[in-house]
Length: 112
Image 1: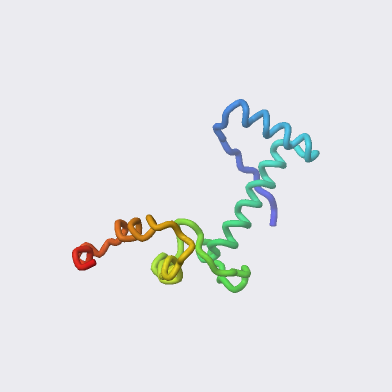
Image 2: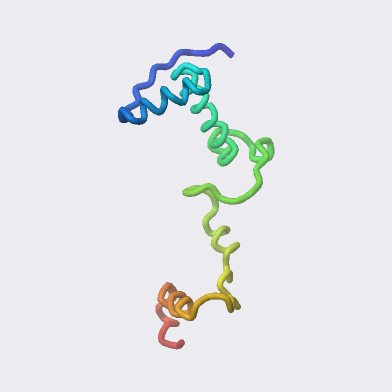
């Protein structure tokens, strides 16, 4: 695959520019090469987290489970954490009150 030149306009502060130049110098790279490397790294990470967004089947990427923030099946995630506070005796007393405050089932509050 042939590389194609793409020009990007990135707005960053002077301190970040200085840090970018220093990082590139320390790694023996040009600023452009460092930015290319960082972009490729972020894309690789995103492909591992949400391969279906890139048209890749999850099995090929080595998906290990879990949820990417803002994505995934939140209902399943909530089911997986169900009962994490149940039968805990190592938490301060106020956690029981706090849990009752967070209870969204308004109709059952009066019954407690």
